[in-house]
Image (tube, rainbow, N blue to C red; front, side):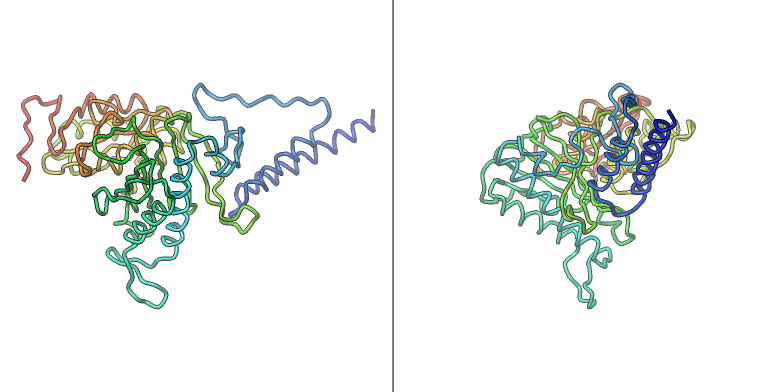
Amino acid sequence: EDSLCEMTGMSLRLAVVACLVLCASAFMAPTSVNTIRAARNVAFSARPAGLKLRAPQAAAGARMVVPGMGQTPSKMGETIEEFVADCEPKLQKVVLSLFSAVKEIAYKVRTASCEKSSCFNEFGDEQLAIDILADNILFANLKASGACEVASSEETPTEDPQGGTGYSVAFDPLDGSSIIDVNFSVGTICGIWPGGTLVGVNGHDMAASLISVYGPRTTISIAFKDKPYTHEFLLIDDFSGNHGKWLRVAEFTAINEGKMLAPGNLRSTQDNPGYKKLFDYWMENKYQLRYTGGMVPDVNQILIKGKGIFVNPTSPKAPAKLRVLYEVLPMALLIEKAGGKTSDGRVSALDLKTVTTEDRTQVAFGSKKEVERFDEWVGWAEPFMVTSKDDPNWKPTEKE
């Protein structure tokens, strides 16, 4: 009995040490996914014989997470190449070309010394603005894929032939470029459609969409029409065996109710009574304000936190500026695949159909009840024109 107790005690001590290594590694940066997975396996293998570990329980619709990593236990750590192996071959090529472009853009963003209009190299020589650099990188990678028929950038909103066949891609090369000079997180937004045009399409037609976040870490959140959920990939930058690879680290399955908001275009509260009422409600009910002015990090936090709302309403004097093709539709697929809700005040943002590449709209992304409250209080708005359910006699001014 004494020998058995001693062996059990030793096994438990080994398990505790392995768990401490696992917890410590979560706070060490950078750390490879394989290192953390190995520590977790040691902890499990060191448990005493006959000891059963109860499987973690998750709330309905919530993602299962491994402590310290924010991962689901199924196939975490797989590369993007492994993840898209079952996709249509040309779609694989387009997706991988975008991941390659984002990796290059991440380096440019991290090493650029930028003002609002231009960047400088280490010698102080003026170079292309970082958003133009990002634009060129995306076009070059899409052209090289051989599977991109047409591409269109928010910087130059025209449909540009890329010499390939299969898919068309619309992108905002560097959303938030106006705040990059203060070193805030910025990002890239991409939507992928089958075929050779980006006009006359809606969000339901998309094959996939993604956003990248250039922050303390470089991540991509991606959703596919034919795959469940939204998935996060991390660019490994630790000089380990996985250095330079994109590894899957999270799966987003639910956006729950929670008092977190990112309110865009606050100037429109001055002449949009519904938005003013909604903003006052948030303040009176002590919501957490989490707004950077960059749409990508502000929407991405809803995926990460699994709660909250992002809105960007319109009004006569402060019209909405978000473009349907380059920003709204790709974001909408990510949010709805993650279990959230989207709306332009009337219908799902995925229902919006592009008439031109420059269509604009108001929008709300987030949890079901929060978006429904937006629909009720702010309501439907034509681009650059708003009506309000709170004041049926209120009329928008004419567009100048």
